Amino acid sequence: DAKTTQPNSMESNEEEPVHLPCNHSTISGTDYIHWYRQLPSQGPEYVIHGLTSNVNNRMASLAIAEDRKSSTLILHRATLRDAAVYYCILRSGGTSYGKLTFGQGTILTVHP
Amino acid sequence: GAVVSQHPSRVICKSGTSVKIECRSLDFQATTMFWYRQFPKQSLMLMATSNEGSKATYEQGVEKDKFLINHASLTLSTLTVTSAHPEDSSFYICSAAGRSSYNEQFFGPGTRLTVL
Image (tube, rainbow over all chains, first blue to last red; front, side, top):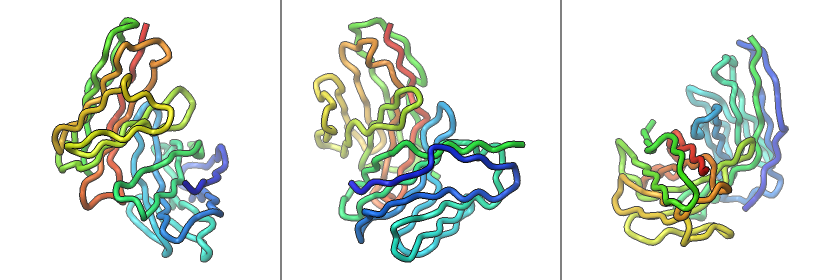
């Protein structure tokens, strides 16, 4: 499985935008870029995913570099409830069941 | 999004006993379910993948005779930790994917297992 590299931790202030980076230099052409987040003592929650184009949904935006070797998850206005571990994961489009391999993720702290 | 439940949410058992954890997809048919384990301050580790009606596929290093997985219906998968020992104490999380939802896995809330 292609690997991703994320900063161990990041901090933000409430109501400010947050840009969470992810490097995936060994990504293959069929790999989807997924983001999940996990709040303390809970199961992960889907945030967003993309393949080549930038994506927006109600939770966040995903900006994918033109060469696809990096991506950035954007939270437009961080709230205290966004404090979580954010995982950037590559999912092979060649598999039929969406197996996910979690890395260490980025711990996001949001200050009031 | 779809809802996945787990039962129990936490369990404490004595060493040597077996524990069964249920994972249910409440509002969709889960053709594939995944079981993960998470130790404190660590990331999720995939243990196995189960497809409805067939045997589970275990990840390397996971003992299939110790962690029994059954996926008998499209809404229920169970993980049984047999002869549990203190080192099996962990947070067990399931996720589910349907035929049209491989782009998004729906995770359960997790089960905290403590083996004394």
